[in-house]
Length: 275
Image (cartoon, rainbow, N blue to C red; front, side):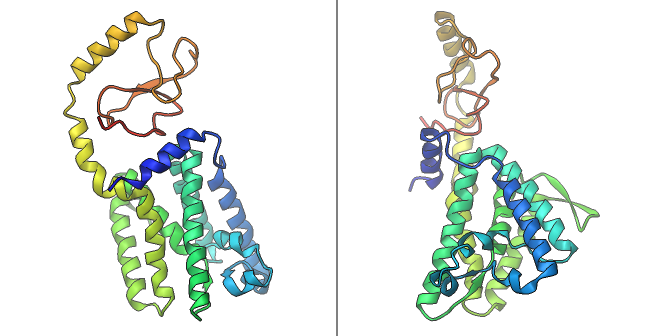
């Protein structure tokens, strides 16, 4: 089965203008506003959660506002907003705005569909995005497992170990929460697996095989081609060269099979060559 992320990569390449640049910043600002609302007006704060019944009665803003509800209205809420802002901006820089926007939208839609399905079966639920952001932490840990953060503002811990703790929390919530809330962690994991499952389970062997490429032979082939051209580097995605765009940086991707060059806009935003 092909990695679903390849289809996302192709979509982003074909639609380079798709996405909301700085989406993590907008979410953080909106969450800060929701945090203030939670302090001053708990009734108004309750109108931010997702409720299928309320949406069907015209309160359509809940389709978006549930994404802004912070983890808490105490000072821990501010810390969580800043923490997920950092995670979101890092993933956006790594993936690109289009892919990060798709990640957020897909997880929103999965949660909304779940809410409507539960409502249709007689289980109305008030939903927030708590598990969506906890699953985003998993995504960060997959790509940056050795980055260290200060756990409880004191203890330096690598992200991969915090991800294990996060996974234990998910399992505990599934076992101890009442139905249908106990399914929310599983629903959040679906979006994570869609975008990161290939990297988590399937790309490690491919990455190892890519490293067996004879780079000396490939580099000699590239240099021969370059001598016949009027440029030194050409992006394999957009076709821009260092001659036409001297302001750009060009790099080679070690995860692609072969010896392929990409510009700074596509080095982290391309479909990896496998043959």
